[in-house]
Image 1 (cartoon, rainbow over the protein chains, first blue to last red):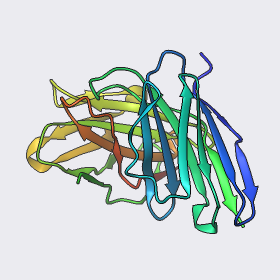
Image 2: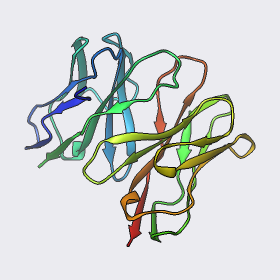
Image 3: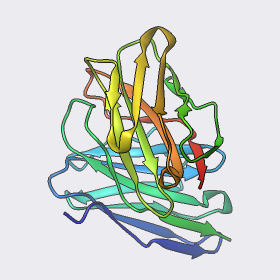
Length: 115
Length: 115
């Protein structure tokens, strides 16, 4: 099993540019999560999907952020326009099952720097 | 809203010392509790979890955690740490029996074990 795959691993961009982060969950997992990790706020859930449908996007900071999951094996998190305060590590995770006790499997993260 | 507090942000120990990392949560209902670990340069991965039964839970690499409902706590312990335990440790909680997958993470504790 390849685990959760994220790309790119590192992204440096200038303020105002569009940034797209990509995630491939573990095959068979029906939940997908996007998290952001910063020194100040720790690890925050941005949005999660179940069977490709967004369930809770209350953590998405503002309209500049959007996430899609067009199929079971791919999701994107887009920031447009990007700002320096968006600099963080963005993690994708996936899991399966309904109980809430399931382990979430994390990808390696995308380290984003907005100049 | 749920919250998770990890009071120790940085811990420095010598090898063979005993470890206890504190975790407290604020939610009056039934919860599922998790400890995740992030080794340098690696993904977050599950150390252990509790959702029912024996409140003393054993995880990988000799770690254990005890759920004390009356104290809203789920402290992580290890009797004798090794240099390889150097990592960042995250406590997380979600609401049990709701199928609600949203995990709330603490801000993490960075552990440095000196050889």
